[in-house]
Length: 249
Length: 223
Image (cartoon, rainbow over all chains, first blue to last red; front, side, top):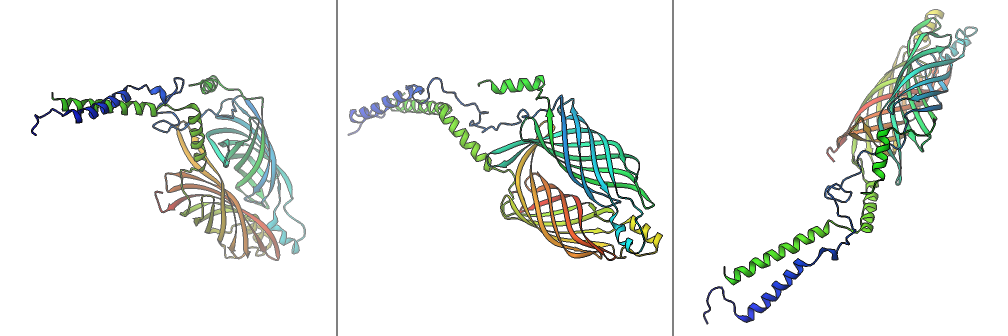
């Protein structure tokens, strides 16, 4: 049988029309069958969106602005001219800005000259007198680096890396003038009031011992604990950030 | 237009309509499901580290300040090789060079006509250490730059070869590596070398402190 082009016989036309009707019905079916009206649609920037956005830079959980910091610390005093020894002390700081602060620090150490010890067998008495040294300095503190640490699979704490530079005096017979110091440190904040700090500083002192006088670089490493008072005082921008964070999307 | 053409055109339009509706549906998720997925993703992030150390070889060049307990502070330069067994643990072999100096000893020698320190002033430090990096973090520098870093502890044994040293030595310390890209790192180390030192007839255990800054290359690169 020869049929004209474009004309389907009824046995073929009926199932095709049924298929077409099904497709049209499916196309016009409402999407609400998959998502309730109150369900949120994802933006590209959402956590599960196209770009898989991360949280990005967050508001700082620990605020230092307009707070006092009182610290105590202890560690080593790696002396250049005399013998290395222990050290202890503390500091008082104030932060007018989140990243900048002032600090007055004290380091106490015992100055001895152990290299002279063997000579006591041949010569009577020590030339160098063992004594305590009190190193008092005023420092500028700059905290440009803020960090988050993963200390356990589900424990993340924040902290700062800071730099200090300052000057002061060493109260000891071996010191011959001003003392300068500079260094780096890290603070970890377990809560809003307390910080654990690690400091590494170089104290530059003009020293004299047994007739030798020179500029010395003394490395001081300390581990300490700080208390921040009063409570956190967020700036207007930080308050806005907190409000923004709490607002539901 | 023939009926067959019309039929296929209608089929195409309706299929497109279905597909477009489906993609719109995929963008909307149930809030509970979304929360579950985000929690799942957060869990995955805990295991993520942008810098891979597992089974990599780290080559380091470093230098810094070496403060001898009894003698003067001086320089130290060296190199280290670290093999990272996993993301947290590594084994390190290091070699460093320094020099013994003491202005006080020199003065005492002049004043009292004795020899306190031997003429040989070279110091070689050879150590093997176990490195443990339990702390991983990221830091924000200034406004937008975010860098990843590790804080690690090191403990090991080795030799300090010098005219005043009796040989064997122990070492422990702390350090931090700041990762740059996928293969480079800047590292800061503080180490305490404990050993027995002899000056004239007097021997004593000493703690020499070294502070070094170094640069590391991780091999293979680009992981």
